[in-house]
Length: 66
Image 1 (tube, rainbow, N blue to C red):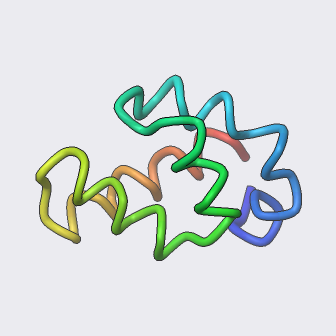
Image 2: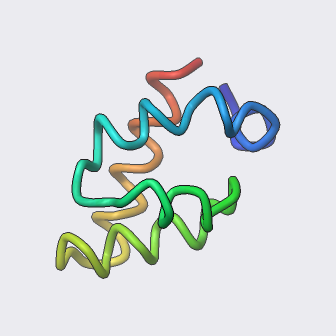
């Protein structure tokens, strides 16, 4: 699934996001509203990882929902 498809199905994939990144609150996931860059930034902030690591995690998660 590409990011445009994920953004279009945001309400359906929010649970999967919370399962993968459990430290993100429901409100934080809601605020991301399908924005990939915001998601990368929030993962960096919550998990203390570098941007490239956060992007890698998001890309791997995106591929798993294809």
